Amino acid sequence: MSHVLVLTTTSTEEQAQALAHSLIELGLVACVHIQPLRSVYRWKGEVFDEPEWRLAIKTTAERFEALERHIKERHSYETPEIVRIEIDGGSREYLRWIDESVGSVSS
Image 1: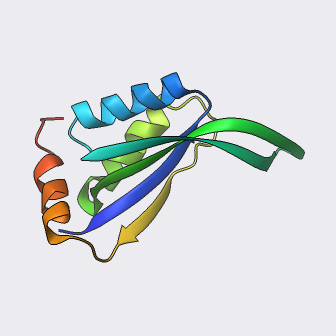
Image 2: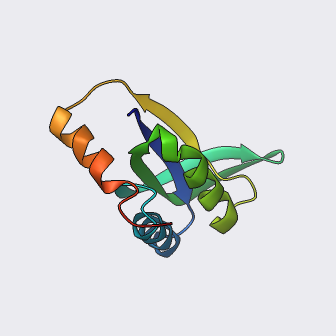
């Protein structure tokens, strides 16, 4: 099974926590790290400088499409960040834990 790290951001900690909990409860992911950060970006011709919350999501490649759909359906942003990064190595035990954790709850 292949593994991926998915990144997304939210505008509030509450939104980040709600999204993380829903992903875990549905069995779409094994783990979500939530971190505060500051984003400087261009949107529709304007430059913004705002706080955001980054979610670093660990899951399997097989669950990515369902994960992406879930984020898009529940996200407050018009165009949420959804970046998929392939994990090409890591602790065998950790990657096995991801496999065992993802999909352990029926969705």
